[in-house]
Amino acid sequence: MASKIFSGLAVYFIFWWVTLFLMLPFGVRSQHEDGELIAGTDPGAPVKALMRRKVIWTTIVSSVIYGVAALAYYSGLLNVERLSRLMGASG
Picture 1: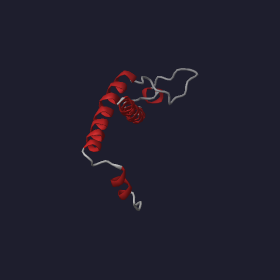
Picture 2: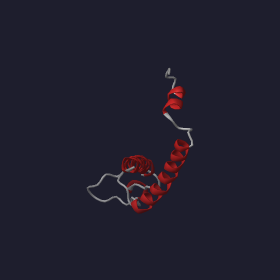
Picture 3: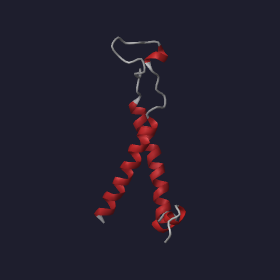
Picture 4: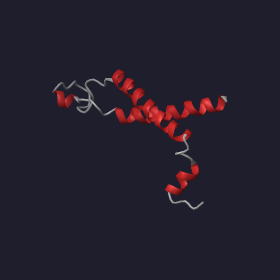
């Protein structure tokens, strides 16, 4: 039972981490775009990263993705046999 919980948390963490990297570019304005160049920094450096907002949105989006994946897994739509047939593996 404990291994299922830790496996589920590990899968959620992977979804969360990938979603975070997908969310990072949204809403970022560079110093060059804002016209506020700080001496000694790259012009492409962000003015504000808005990380709190991105972490909240990452948690929401990854929870929805994880929920859909868990629902598909427990309903039998997502299993090794079906995925191998979809990918063309003979079985």
